[in-house]
Image (tube, rainbow, N blue to C red; front, side, top):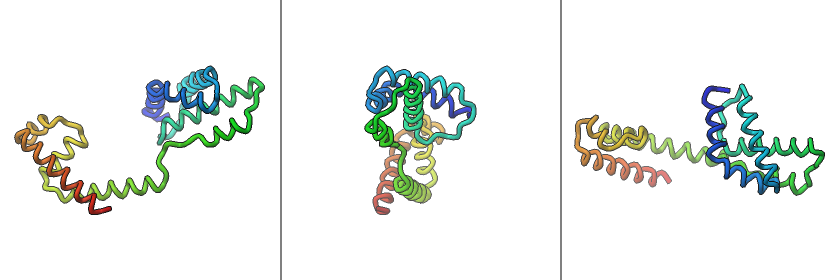
Length: 169
């Protein structure tokens, strides 16, 4: 597994455990089976060696846990009813579809073009505050301007980008 994928999935599983378990209980109809499946999912993730980037960790973990639960039920000699199979097949993938991805890329491209039209200092302030997450005071110090100037430039940049994106629609 690439160095960052396995820990990210394990962390996501730990942080979203309650949500994942509730979803599994709805699908499987059994609290104990859902807990056992999530536990086995955690163990299986720790043993995996190769894995490409995961676009939707929640959907990936749910699918993995459901598959493990199905395997557990098979080993126990219990088969799934057709209703249970239908529920598993209909398990929603929260990842955006192709249309949403295309729309998001278009909006991102429009934002990039709007940012390119900003004056250099305004663009730099927008990137430092919004992209890099720096506090406005630190940006002011770094650029040698007042915090008030950073606030004004940030507001003007936001307003300009909002108008530009609104015109695109």
